[in-house]
Image 1: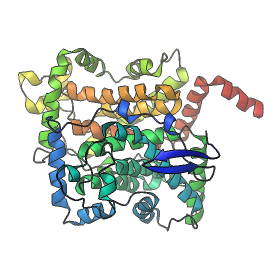
Image 2: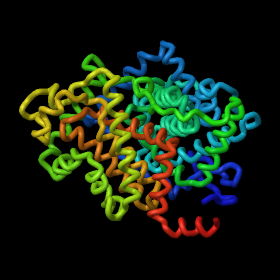
Image 3: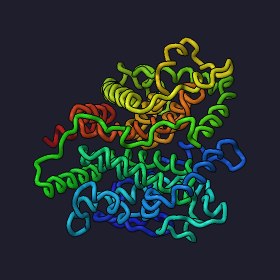
Image 4: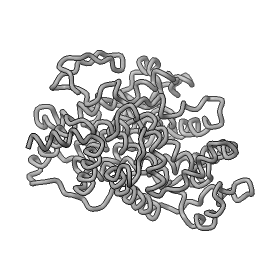
Amino acid sequence: MFAAAALLFIGGKSFAQTEKDTVYVFLQDMPDAGIYLPAPPDMLSPQYSDDFAQWQWGKTIRPTDRGQQANDDSQWGINGMIRVHQETLGFEISKEKTPAIYRLLYNVLWTENLSTHNAKRKYMRTRPFAQYNEHTWGRFDNERELRFNGSYPSGHTALGWATALVLSEMVPELQDTLLRTGFQYGESRVIVGAHYQSDVDAGYLCGSTAVAVMHASEYFQKDLAAARKEYCKIKGIKNVSQTEGFPDGSKVFDGPVTEESHRFYGDIIKYYETLPERETERGEQAKIDADNSIEALLKNFSAPAGRELSAEATPAIAALLSYARDNMVKTAAELGRTAPFRERPYVRLNSRRNKTLISEDEEAKKEVTSYPSTNAELGWGMALLLVEIMPRETANDILTRGFEYGRSRIIAGYSYPTDVQTGRLWGSATLAHLHTDPAFQKLLQDAKDELNPQAKGKKKNRK
């Protein structure tokens, strides 16, 4: 709920909440990334190798046009979002000329900012430029402030990805460009040396989580509708196009990691680090997680949701998740078809130790690409959808299960870590598009009514 005049302490600043300028979700209602995400890699751990390699790669990009873009992308806040997106939208964005769109961007900014708050304070990770006694490449970065602001997760990344998701829902016909811009805005933080890759990866997930929670706010829904109406008025059209196709992942992401890439070794190292988990209870869970049928997914999320989820106990929720699942399987398959083929770890490494946990699947899966991870897309996408409709106190458990559902693919030998991360991001992008689908919207409302029948009764009475 909104408060007429409440104060929040965000990023070292007091921020007044009013009905005009506010957040859609309070900090206490935002899922805690310090709980649902793992800790950042320690510098002495093998997993740090990817962070180090990406930091070195970023420095080689700085003298290029992409480096200049990263330099510009260091601008955080409402002006930064206006700069990177107004060319795509095709008109100038300002508080005076586009008040509805400006308000939406402004409130999304301050809401998503809360998504990284707890994890930043919990870990207070040193940023790469400070760790190695260098300077950032970002011309808008205040090094003195950044030294006292945790590196994990990346706040810039959370902002860029959250804004891209919201705008792609507002104007679906521009979704490819908007999502690409949001993705690169996070990648830019590695190039300028302000963040490690793992900070950026976590930032994307925080941003998608913030958007999921915002969808439960009636004020967000009203602002999104008003912004879309304003866009149509400026463009001289009746409605935004209901784009039939989902986003084109080949236009959003950089594609799978190749063996020539400096990131391939990080994938291999992280894969080998999970092998001992196969002999533990976590390995048994990875076997269970190999089943991505709707029945298995409902059962998988029942415990964290705090109630039985099934076609019998919660038919409306089951129908919603089944519809989302079928579409996410399609989008994962489409991205897999358009991207270069990547052999699965157990095929590429080809040793006795590197068999999968589910041996009967080995031959069948050899011809299926590792990129992106379909299960990771399903796990994170389903978690985001459930967070939108379930009681807030279940969010951290649901998101933890969704994250681990994807990690099971690494443990089982089916996908590399970078394939899993892309799958998660693809789940959030697919979900953003689904929110523009009338059939999905109907199923979503039915699921909400099933969870809260009293609210449904009140709506009928008001009519």
